[in-house]
Image 1 (tube, rainbow, N blue to C red):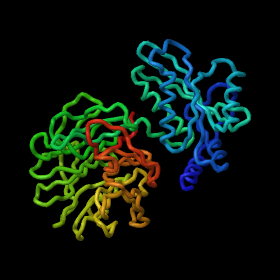
Image 2 (tube, helix red, strand yellow):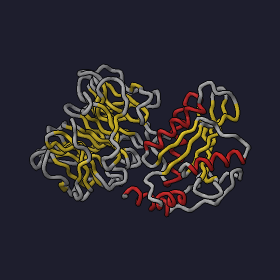
Image 3 (cartoon, rainbow, N blue to C red):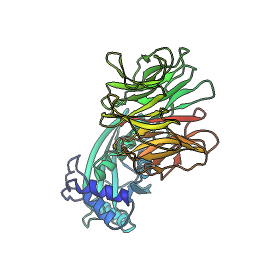
Image 4 (tube, rainbow, N blue to C red):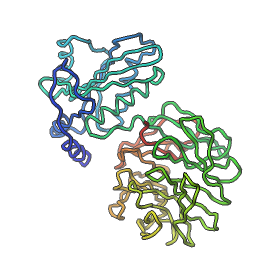
Length: 444
């Protein structure tokens, strides 16, 4: 019910689009369809039911079967969003036949579909262009409500599908989807942990490191270009930065004696909060990336570690044992006004939501499980309840989904779930046991 109210609030704030016929001129690419969402939610439905037939090839040959694969992947993306249910149809739609198109939409509407996605594919030797057309099947005229063209290399058919799905989510909610994102994680046998990269749904795994060392704690920069991480590749736990999509050498960010760990990028991408023990005790510092200057934030006899920035950049959540067993604290970005957030248990790994309204953390009360709390310390609630250990949460950029690792299925694997703890499901990964997921921002 809370999700429905949130969607309605977003939809009500967005201007309705002008009605158009099946063959009318496409509306502006940034138009949206809040009225369809309002109608669906008012009817009591929990998800918008969207009809997605195979795309229609209007130019070129399709040896890679993109007309089938693109809508298949886009449909899976929309299901994952937990906003849509999807009905597929292997029969492509006609082009230029208004009556046949109307009959197909009418049949889908009669079967319970609220909207339809029609794709037109133009395929060249190396490039693929998809024109997506979004229809409102709740209106008598079955109106065209949004259209957009997207161009990608033919080899990037999955990313083309992800971008189409994200645009559909945008049209109905005002916020792009998260299909065109990546997840970095740690995998490998004991003594040789490497970083890997996959699509958000676990497809297309690629190694980010291959240094045969122990690589830990990946953290994405806000521009999605680079990943900060701790590695023993030089024999000591130093902090490095790699560029996930560019052929650039790995950069050393912090190489002090002792611990250089737990990186967290500031929202503006100019700084990295981290844990250093260079002065004896593990404390939280902020590194200005452009200059290499370090600024110390905490000074305490206890251990202060695992910083996590608020989306405004004005506060930092962190883990400390200054009051006994480890708990979650919050301080100003300058290190002042420290306040305790959690009590009871052994609480670590705070992760501040991109929406700013929730901090998820790992609590050990027997097993390790994920909990959530408001930034003022109220409304603590449990998100996982075993079996096994559930740890190391990472927020998707929409603030609605989380990735985490769990040992519930013979060894550690990456799972995803909604922010309320529902829809928990494993993500297929390769490279041995998988831990420490880091969900990227949306890609450019």
